[in-house]
Amino acid sequence: MLKDSRKRFIQVLVALALLVLVILSAVLLWRWTESIGASAKRKELEKVLHTIVKDEGEAGLLSMAGVTVDNIFYGDEGVSLFEGQDTSWRYSADEMQNIKVYENCNKSVVHITTTLDVTVNSFMEVLPAQGTGSGIILSTEGYILTNAHVVEKATSLTVKLFDQRSYPAKLVGLDSEDDLAVIKISVDKATPLFPITIGTSEDLKIGQKVIAIGNPFGYDRTMTVGIVSGLNRPVKTAEGKVIMDAIQTDASINPGNSGGPLLNSRGEVIGINSSIYSTTGSSQGLNFAIPIDTAISVIPDLIKLGRVIRGWLDIIPVQLTPQLAAYAKLSVSKGILISQVVSGGLAEKAGLKGGTQVVQYGSSVIYLGGDVLLSINGHPVEELNDLYLALLNTRSGDKVKVLINRKGEEKTLEIQLVERSAQNVSALVR
Image (cartoon, rainbow, N blue to C red):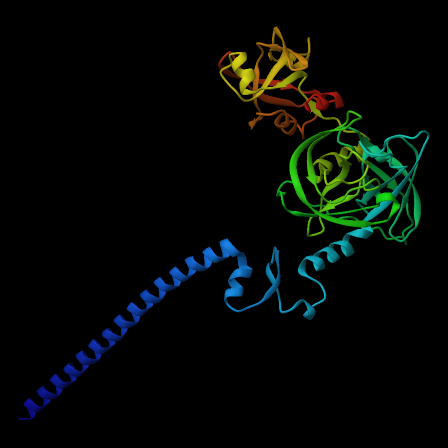
């Protein structure tokens, strides 16, 4: 009997254990099912929220949640929100950003006054700058970056700092081709200099906010705000100077702004304000700046050598178009047609061939039948601006590998570069 009681007890325990197991399994199954349903609902909600953000932005999403947002600032560290009515805070995020950039950068901008023997057009395509311009402090040693047209014809230079102290300056290096120059002032150790923060122009986007600081019409360290309106612009002035790969901006630029910085929202220099296209001599929303990357590539030569020695192919290039390619019966429609090579030059010695058939092309005379340049050192060359950019960081004497198309066949030639001249670049702008 004891044995039967023990057996029944064990059976009851087993039954209870099975019951508990079944109950636990049911609970887990229910929770798992709920979890799957919640996950599906979450994913569906995420899709809906992503759609709202895409169509209406973060402000629209927050508005649906009952959160009133007056301004949103996007930065490297995330998103900053300003809530409530505008009476609850003094400045918008955009205004705070502008204020911070000005406070951090204005001491790095100098006012340059020049003495000229004769009246010249020192501001490129606008009214004469009257011997004034702007500059950017590069180092505590007193090196200052500005435009070549501000200082190149000056007999004397004077630099005024943010604290109104003035110092004579000397020209260190000049690059008329890119309209850049470096000048230098000597100050005592007790005089602080505030070098500008250098950024990059490589990743600029059209629509990005930019800030200009300069000395228009003699008003020291004036700040204007705009956007990047265009990139990679080749700009030719009435004086025949050319700015390649220029940044177009609608930030107000006037006589006296030349040589001043074009800044991004972090207060980094991304361009040097250089020229303005105008029918009145004042800003009309079409302004240009030299990319800071271009300046960075030439500053060491300007300080060390006083000039820049760039590389170039001794050829006469012509932009290939589909119409020209069809007329010349070429097998390619993109690239640079080699109209002529310099007789006895390095390109000719390396095997590059120019054309022999003379034709009228618009207002110019060109030669057909020559090679078509396709790439330089692996960089595709489809337009004249590509030719400029492919050789931007080269020096005369360097050798480059040039891929060409000759009568339907591709060949690679190694060509030694000659020194580039301003006439070479002027030919790129039609």
